[in-house]
Image 1: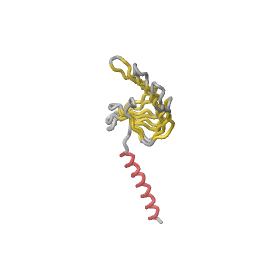
Image 2: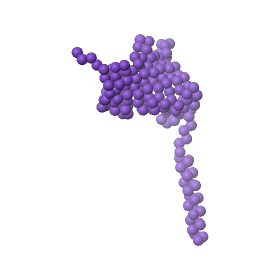
Image 3: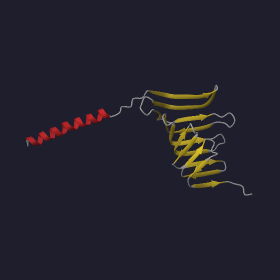
Image 4: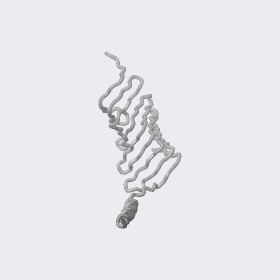
Length: 175
């Protein structure tokens, strides 16, 4: 009976030490900064090109793989003096600085100046290449169409556009 209690005591003392070892080896992610009511204006040649707004930004640029996240969603407006503004919004966003990739997640909506929109649960954006893509379903809507696709791959102007299987309604003229 004594041996049984001794084994139980040793087991529990080892468990506590094991948990302590796990805790010591955990990476503590302490952000470089947290900003409430975040607003970022991107300008070039004294002209505002884009405006990013978010209720909260958490900056992890002090980590080995630096990133910044927007856990409460974000809205970006891209200004184009000739064609009008494009507005992008999502419930969550994360920017990876080393790979220069942006992941937008949850109710991602892109609204173009002509009223066309793209809806998806997730869209990736490569700002250097000005390229959007996803393997998730999308809904691409405009005045003359309402298209569902199984994936999406396009440049920022949608002049180079590839999708997966399509279904939906199209309005076209027969010549």
